[in-house]
Length: 460
Image 1 (cartoon, rainbow, N blue to C red):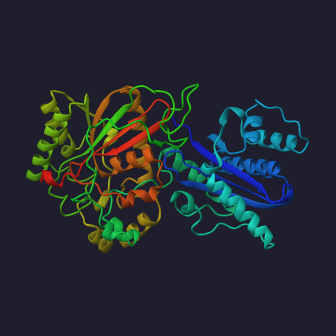
Image 2 (cartoon, rainbow, N blue to C red):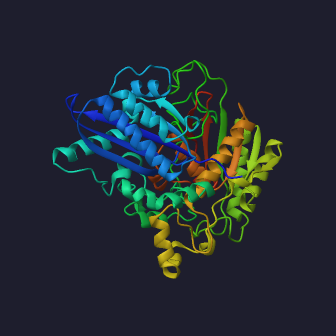
Image 3 (cartoon, rainbow, N blue to C red):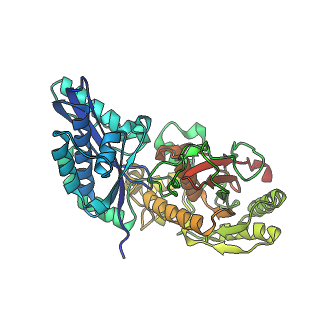
């Protein structure tokens, strides 16, 4: 059974004079990764703010329909008027609004579209597009996407082309989303600050880093009340009725589900920074890795907060998890969704060796999140969708509990990035040592709080 396609669509419109020179902007996003799938913007001449906002809504819904006509679309706008009128809670009285609202309602079936109001500061992408369109109109031109357009707001890949280009790629995007190989999400590991000058250098330094880490030491595994709000459409629980949905300042949401994220201990490949994923030799822990597993088990036992241990199926994680579980008197549950990505023919190679043997494939992988490593590896976005689904399932199964997830570089990075609502580029700026710990608390109002716990270089 094919899983439903979901989009987040954000739209805005503006008028410099109200009425005055006006334009709109709209962006279609992948809710799991925050990736930009399509952008629309247009200068529409003299009009009011509300007309421009409705035209932005119409353009955004059409862009979503071009990508997948059966998609479930969450529309996010900072126009209370448009959101309430399209939701059916406010009557449409103005004669200019009625035909626009009717046009918007016909683009997709009502059952496929929901509306959510957001403050203006959270609608920056669409607002920027609308202003770019108005600026272009002032120069007597129409809006064209810039090369860095998507990256300005979300760190995403290059934006979609002009409206005419969308139809050409719609079938490919639809197939990719349905199969779980959508827009780019993550890289296999983080790079050091010294290697941050270019993207290629960052990836080269990150295949399976040993790392010395500089994580902040913090007492306790249960994070403080939520300080970072997870963005709408990320798959986290929606705010309960009557809740504020604020960043940890609302009513008591009860005990969060807390995922303590433990990267496995070192293997022989870790210090050599070789690609080591699901499709490789499945190495065991090295002597250093076993010492790390024992040390982190003692640290977790001293804290006494972990109630359940869940592990990736790969050997290095199962060995690390078993060391902890034995010390805590728990059993290990194996979760397939926590596995590392499959690096295909690159398994066991360094970045330099991959660049020498598969230069074209490596460049394609660096350029596109949909590109997979040579020989049938797993793309970054496929991994993000898998890990997001695993997160949601585990949250349901372990509500209110503290769960140790023993996993790999990529799953930890994805969970951290999604909890922060950070752009994909943030993944290249994280350092993750072997046997390092982090924790994410997920609250009932949809907020998530992240804590980086310790530097494990002393465990060597």
